[in-house]
Length: 74
Image 1 (cartoon, rainbow, N blue to C red):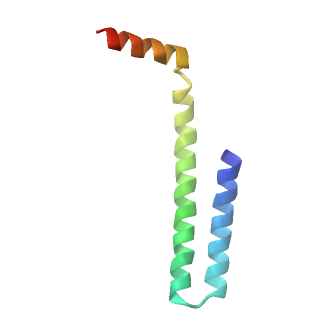
Image 2 (image 1 turned 90 degrees about the horizontal axis):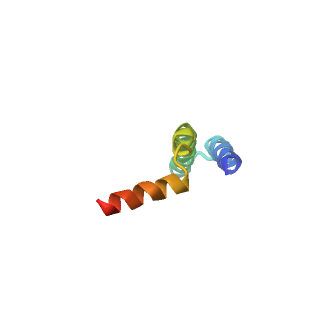
Image 3 (image 1 turned 90 degrees about the vertical axis):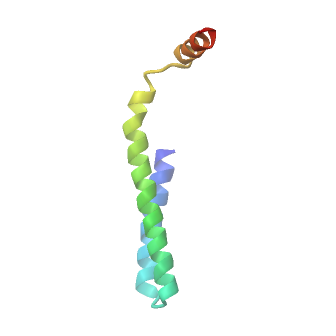
């Protein structure tokens, strides 16, 4: 999944650069900026997800189920 996101990020930035270079229309520049912004935000979310991933591995499905079961009894 990470490689798919990295590929989308790279493709988004590349496409935005091509649109900016080839299209003088304001609308196309807006589209290019939007694509670039989306690619940037996708990259930010990937970094955040990777940073949080080690924390989420501390809970196994079994331990989570145990916590849920105990809280339902109280």
